[in-house]
Length: 393
Image 1 (cartoon, rainbow, N blue to C red):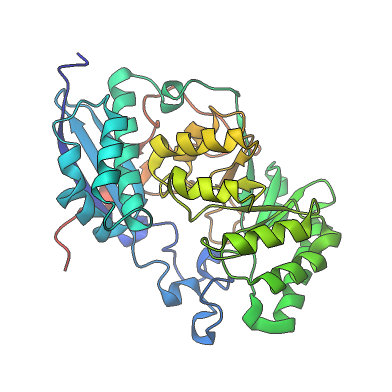
Image 2: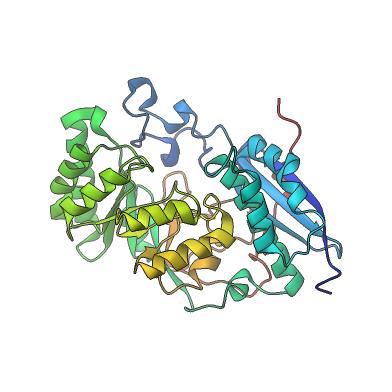
């Protein structure tokens, strides 16, 4: 059977707006509101992340089908651009291959895109294909992805919640709450005071034992980050996340040295491949890393990143990604917990991250995720929100 089954089709889809990328939310949703970003230095783009185009790409879905009729799919950010790359370039390395040849397919996709890829939307596209291949192989073997990665090392995954309501997160049983930072350096002293007041109020609401973290989303410079951390020290943050642009290893190095053991420093959400993370780890720029499995190269590459991090004694706590991250975290001793994005408009209810795109998506119960033994990633596509990816306009 292993020799006989081949991949015979690869299909790409974009997603209707109401089922699109989780950044593409309606006005008033916390995730598109006033959150500090690299564009916050420009007043006209400060009030909303959608104002400068965070939501323009949308979602890409890649579906692969084997000669026995089995299918698998993967999801990433990239919309029509990523779909075009997959359909017109990457597909030649997939169709006709054995579903077992995941390592070979990944290597060919990556090497073939050296001249225009290496990071960004090309790695998003490769990630979507890779996730689809793992899902397909899981369905062929009738095994969950976590079993194919070596098996579970824990029965359930503790989660922290990302969103503006850590008090709600605590009530739901999460181990901590990560707040998006509303104001960056361009908002001056007034913005800094408001940031501090936000975390002061949060600590008063949740008490001393509940973790609090700050997500700075590449928006800060080193002097501001140092002052912010100094001002937040009384509120005992667990970590401060992604303060600087992804390529500014030097700022992360300096910041970590200045903080010492006061607050953990994390980054990596917008980094990709083992080589990008090798530089990050060797420069000792972060206390732990946060690759996104749907952006960094997929499960195939995330396992290599994690092995490298393990050699440095560093946690791997993937960014978001729901079920795609959970199958990985379930298999790793250096991934002790996971992130859950509170995708309800006001972050007051637990809803699936990818809703309505995925059917059967697991959500935390009392702050913990348990995975079923369903094959692949254990979720199905809601085809009612899919659009076949046509040619680029």
